[in-house]
Length: 185
Image (cartoon, rainbow, N blue to C red):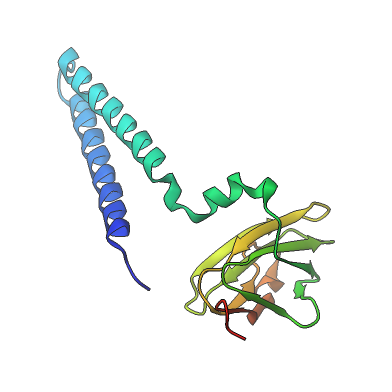
């Protein structure tokens, strides 16, 4: 898995923000616990820093929100027509896939419609490395749909990502989804 410079930058930014916030909290607690009252200047500095950090954090989130891949998809979801649809049933602590399995190509808009008649389950799709590609909660009696674009070819497993009793651990289907590159047969 590649780590981009932007990913490292984001990690550095968030780590720096956490360290600054923790140091400010310690600074404020020290002022509260020291003998005598803390000065008005100390409070002004503290609340000024907090205001600055909140403004920077909100600005940073607004500027980097496009980095989250599903934001664009969710905004455009109402107008998105799926290239492929798969109906999957969850029940009795197992998933039932469509006959023929799930085979898609990278870049296709794939709609997963998962239903449950008995319990709340999770529908998690995982890469071979064990990293989660996506997941959604599956509620009985509700429409549980997600549209996803696979960007990398390979085999993906399905697991329940929601605890539904001691049998939940058996809800694992290895290599249940095959994703081929565009143009590959």
